Image (cartoon, rainbow, N blue to C red; front, side, top):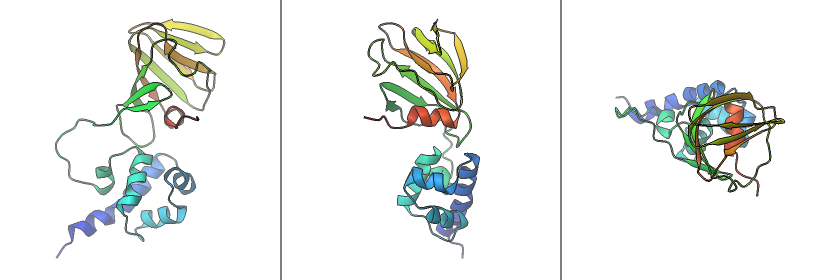
Length: 192
């Protein structure tokens, strides 16, 4: 007689390995990100260790997928993405995609001008693209400064010092696309 729970758990390891490889992450990097050891991660991926909820939760978070995706829960028929907004450094980032690795889409809400905790340009690996949905945006790229309005877009190499924020007393809303490096730079916890 088949055991459905065992069947589900047997499929977790290959899914974990595929998600990690899709992100081009090493076991060591994933261990640092999740707090699990590289040995534990290897044993989970090969099926030598039965996964627990305490192990699966940080893995789902690290890979940016719902827990249901790790255990191949049956689809509910609802295709909508139900991801929670993240607040970082005065910004609100609303994830619009949930693929592991690759380009991710976010709606980013910048606070009104003067309310941003920093106006210091940043750099990181990667490439970004944004489209202004609402408001006016002040965009600093290297030594240049631009003012963008609704319907305007910009794309740039993020190794060039850059800063994005609202240009007036209203919040600015952008649709932003960035790769894994940009996602990590924007979603890493603030250093206080």
